[in-house]
Amino acid sequence: MSSHTGSHDVPEENLPGRREGAHGEVATRAENPFADPGLPPHEPRIQDIDERAAKRSERVVALLFTVSMLATIGFIVAYVLIPIDQYILVWPLGEISALNFTLGLTLGTALFCIGAGAVHWGRTLMSDHELIGERHPVEADAPTKEKVLADFHQGAKESQIGRRKLVRNTMFGALALVPLSGVVLLRDLGPLPEDKLRHTAWEKGKLLVNQNTGEPLRPEDVTVGSLVMVQPEGLEEGSHEFQTEIAKAAVMLIRLEPEDIKDKQELDWSHEGIVAFSRICTHVGCPVTLYEQQTHHVLCPCHQSTFDLADGARVIFGPAGHPLPQLRISVNEDGFLEAQGDFAEPVGPTFWERG
Image (cartoon, rainbow, N blue to C red; front, side):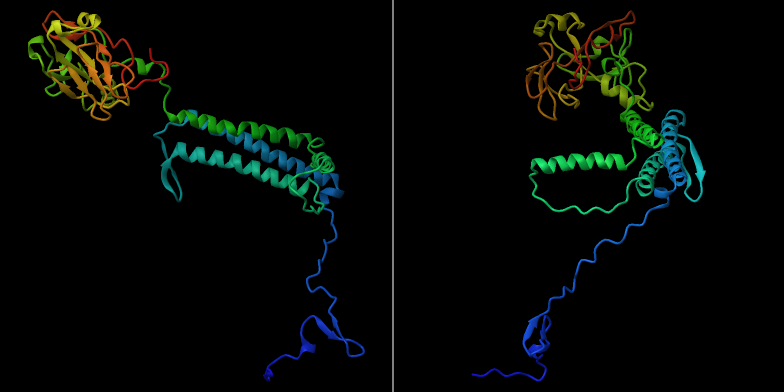
């Protein structure tokens, strides 16, 4: 069957890549329509031919690095001196935090000047000769390694880092100072704890106050088998520090029969069988509130850590790693229960210096 050629078919002699020879033969087109144009001729910069222009560029780069150093110092000074509650009017932003505005402005300036100085250095002082990098296998042979090392030394030489000492020294200064901004910001992780984790609001003579009624307790107010939540005298619920202090000073008061207490220190630190233990679980700090009257066990509802209140509040089940700290108590001359001091060890979850 013969094929039909339509009126719109292109004649073979007119197809791309073929042309009619002098004697009618067809030849393949030799020209490459996407030939490599090559690199344009190199044009020197004014800094390459005029040392005064190069010096001007050097001073500009050094100035940018110096401004970066000053901005970093300004960041640290602002962080230390500007109050966190001070506000200023900045048009068109309105009333904003003076501290946040200053920190952002100084840190942004420090980082920008480092970048701008590096770019200006590269565009005006470093070599701008175009180089062709041939592709090669990932694994380099010995000659290639030698060439890379030679190129590195050549690049270091062309960067003029050894010659332009002013640029080099100011750059090192800027790069050395700007990380201090991040170090200073670490302070915002919180105030230094010092020894605050080891101390609570309890101290010698502080009355044990019923957390529900706000009234001090007498021994007769605590019956055998009962559980009373108490807090130190003077800790007001509406105060600014209440949540911080109660998280360490919350105590549960339980009355046991003295003969049921197995631990000698627990008995010595109690009063007529009334024992006071921290309510803060030593696992992750949940409030321990579930009391089993018959077994004298107390249970943390979060992860089921169980403590034996008749045996020094030792852990008998669950992930808690330490017994509940005990508060030593007695009765004052007015007949009210009072603390004989603070807890002998840190309350709450274990931390690395507990002991």
